[in-house]
Image (cartoon, rainbow, N blue to C red; front, side, top):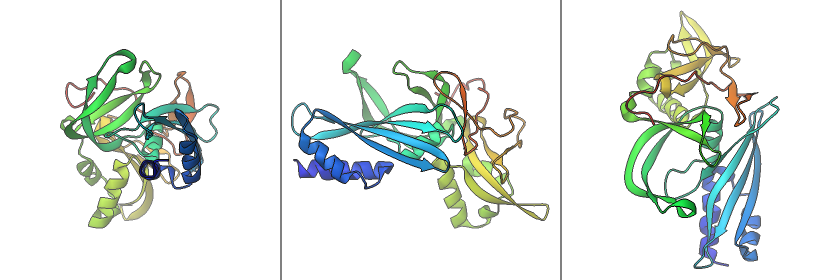
Amino acid sequence: MNQENFNYLKDQVKYTGFGEGHENELRDKIQSEQPTFQLLHARDFGKDNVEAILNFRKSNTDEKYFFNSYEIKVKPDKAEESATQTFYIGKANNYTLKEAYNLMCGRAVYKELEKLDKVGEGEHVRYVPNGEKYNAWVQLDFKNTDESGNYKVKTFHENYGFDLQEALTKLPIKELNNEQDKQELMRSLEKGNRQFVTFLQDGNVENRYLQANPQYKTVTVFDAQQKRLRMDQKESNTDDGNKVSNKNGQKSQASEKVDTEKKSKRRKQGIS
């Protein structure tokens, strides 16, 4: 067994969000010298059940293995069906398990991305990072899938015009009064989390939840029970924003009250 390769894969699995509990199984799989193998991972986020299949493949030229992708299956609390998506692992544009879960819940994630160049055709096609980096909000498009059955991705570039900090300043958020709290809030929202905050409004202290909504250039607000509050007329009129589409076009309920929007007209710049 290539010890250096094992150590690299062990850390890659860990820092992608799958923890340290797969080390022994990973070692056994590598020592078996099969051309491909899988690891299974399951955990809960709140009341939502998440399962993942991690896919590994042996190099055609030496004994090294590569962690190529993982398929995530999210079954929201009280839902009858699960939704699935494959996330690919490469030299750039990777997503942690928590980021993948947040995307599957319909939320947006802010990432530093690298432009990819298409190489090859057909079964041999691959996409290679070209070193040109940019920042963007990423969100899954549950209405459209690609040829492999994956949900397509909507990308909101910086020139699209969504400024998270500016959007937050329009709300009476207590955490904005402390720089450290503000930065922690922004980092959490950028990871796609629905974040608890405190509103100071008309002399009252109110518990609220927030999530970034780059498509509408705003922040979506939920009450203490995570029921959506209508704060902006530009947003669609839904009560709790908790519907997630599966690939069959049906709807399932997410325990974290996932927000979805009616699809707006596509902007001419900043969105892909």
